[in-house]
Length: 247
Image (cartoon, rainbow, N blue to C red; front, top):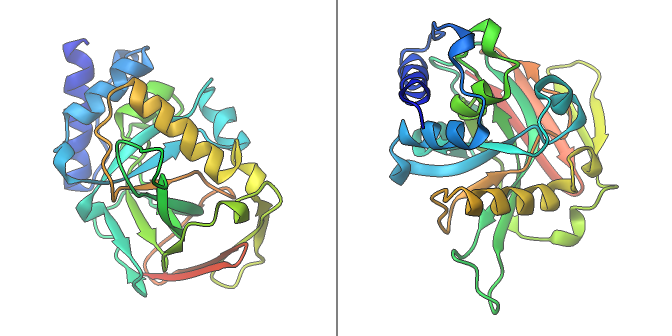
């Protein structure tokens, strides 16, 4: 791993803490996704990882990043909230929101006599990249920036029901009073469950610090939209419903 990848990951972490864009030459980005994943984890306290977000999990993201496989980023305890009515956008740079199915790891390492996922939730992933504009479409830039980690909001959790997470699962998402965007579970590659399993395979290969109780945000079910304090979002997926206001 080059020192530049580590330096850039630390620079991005500092920019996120300050709530401002990082400044660096995009040509310094590494070109090895494995190196970028390692550097991103090296810049944070991995003991505080509460969730993982999956990037490049749908056709519109893949078109931008040109990824051949999914990528991922860690979300820390302070970046993850659940089952509240309002979520603060403090210090997030140009935040966006998209509905996603979240799956909770029930046991790690897996055991043949125990379920892999314990609970599920419909929530909102809130990407807020601090990458310079010239680096935003670069795959390794996104990985170094923890896939644009900004925040993750979990709606009310219910027991895991894999049968609901099919390709034909109906999805709708509304910002304020705009016409809703609609989609289906299959708009995420492999569906939400397949996406989570693909992530776990990658995470194992890259020695990511997985633990029971961590949540996996399985990928945007519709394209994200910008959000601001005072906005509210609402989503439905199968029999799950979530609504959130931003402050």
